Length: 107
Image (cartoon, rainbow, N blue to C red; front, side, top):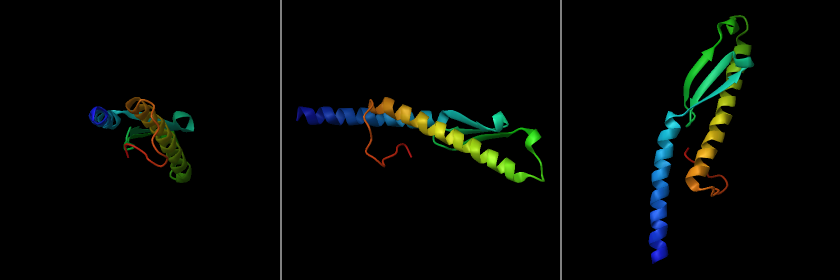
């Protein structure tokens, strides 16, 4: 029974750490860029778009496709960085314990 109570205590501690991490992820800002920095996209650690910045030199009403492609590339860059950030923070919470395949937290 001692092991069970110790396991329950560890589970509660991990739950507390997960809640703290969720709050930190929502406050974190990760920025992705494209076009040599002409487009920047900033996401929260949960993947919510917080900021989008477009250099005015890119605004050409006759060529919107390039602008769309650059925004997409910047978003994908930021999203990749968010995933790496989340993986790092999850590793800190779980003490390096790997989650089962297909299980993604905190989303």
